Length: 319
Image (cartoon, helix red, strand yellow):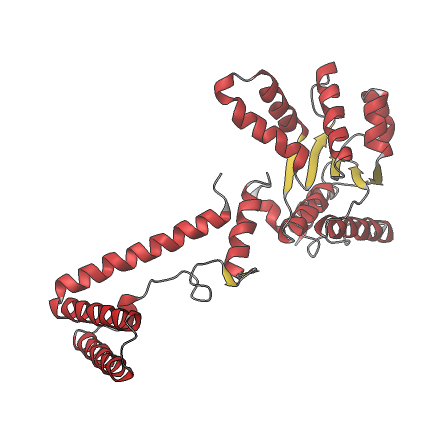
């Protein structure tokens, strides 16, 4: 994967090359402009030599006057051919920073922030539709007990804020039937954290276990790539595990899930989990060590009621 700052440097170099090719084409079409450009370059060379030799002020002023005359002549010639000075300027995607990515040393331009956000998004595992699942668009309208879900909304927002600021919040576990808002809040947290400049992985439990199996059993020619994916599970700022409980349960999968959670605990990195299993079902489903980590190291929030997707669809039919 290419780093965003490398992409920025490469794009800037491409823009300069495009400008140089365009200038060459203009000069071929209008040799008079090429001659003037050569004169300007030669005059600049004279000034450099004069400065190195500590030449007289009068001589420097004479060269400056000649340079001004050449610049004016070039401008008039460009106008004659329906052109302007932009011929000699790269066509930057971002004129504010001229595609450098920084407006001041240490101060990133908005264009660079957007490039880095896009890179984090593309590596997050989020589906395109999840970009619309934000805190602002999470509606309490569909819940009977709005006070309870307002508290859940506030707790998940607080969790997102702490992750975004580099804090160590208590993990979250959301459980309940399908369609009751768990995915929307997980997506909202992911979007918030990504926007704050942190990294997120949003993966179904089956995909996580696939990555782990590949890293353990993949042939050596592909192991580097699978190990890179595996390391991201342990090191990403926020890991969101979707559909816990749908995986094929074996001693191997439980052991690997336990190891994953322990690694994140050791490094102070949070997780967020959504599942259809109740806490009682999780205790029955998983061995004690694993269920203890899942439930004991998380704030647990219950979702209930009818599927919001079904209610929205039914409401649309009535209108």
